[in-house]
Image 1 (cartoon, rainbow, N blue to C red):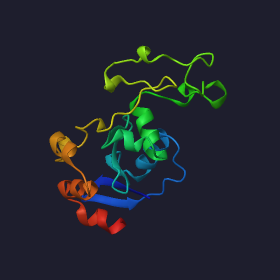
Image 2: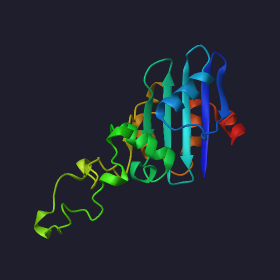
Image 3: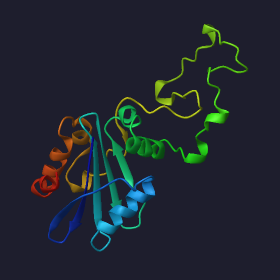
Length: 182
């Protein structure tokens, strides 16, 4: 179960709206949705949360590229909206993802089993999946300073768990607005 909300910054504070992600398939779709909620190209913060598994914060400032933070990239990558965000952060696009016809399903070349002595002991941060893409880390990923100018410092964002979105909203001074759309 997802919870998603948009917080648009205005002259009078923040305005929140519950948002449906049904038509969101890409980060561009999400950024467009945020820009539609913006007042005078001001800051919009999108929150996405999947139960207590992970949360994501996407910040859109006018026509600038969206900035993204995920609390747990590995958990997020196992869900549709989280996978969309982790793919963006890891630099993947749909053209890079192998289709089923080209996958080597037994994980070997020409069906020959690999020997154990060929195991790669590389840095887990740079882990590569069998399909050749980077594996999301089991922790935070993205721009952990995206809310620093709004009162949520990097160390505070990285330390959040549980009801993180309420804590962020409290720091932004918009708890009541966010709770109204929950």
